[in-house]
Image 1 (spheres, rainbow, N blue to C red):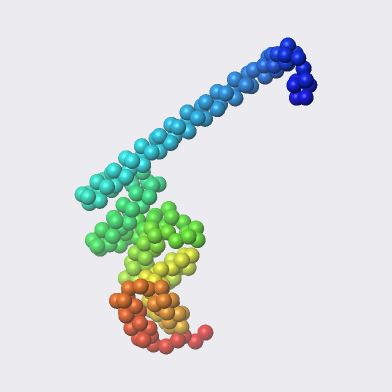
Image 2 (cartoon, helix red, strand yellow; image 1 turned 45 degrees about the vertical axis):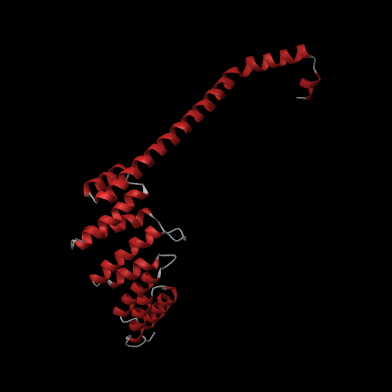
Length: 209
């Protein structure tokens, strides 16, 4: 490089021509690669934005109409989007209200799998676990409730109360008292706090380890 700058103008031109003759195909390929990368990135961003707009519009229509067929279209066409999980959450609620717990359970498990616990609070993940725990409690699957809560980094007041309900049903009164107390500390709803306090006072006693 030092020789290049110290050379005369004619010598510099010869050096550049020699460099071009030697590496011209690599240079052309590099330019083509850069251009394709820029075009591809722009196309990808444009396509992603278009898909996001289409999905958001479709989801808005679903909310306004509560049309199950539109919900199915979102889930089938955009299965990996957050809108698909919102639809699943709503359809799980609908299925539960129609006494179809099996379908509701399947939908909620899909949401949980799609929103793996990363250590940070995820409202969608928490909502799915809360509703699934309710199904388990209604079906007296108390061990399933505890298993569901074990792998959760942050438990809400409702989830702690559900965990305590399961522990109480299994005769784990000491653990149930601890979970109820944590639920009471985390709750901001006066009615819920009153109910949790009643559950604490109704505990039979503490289990002996």
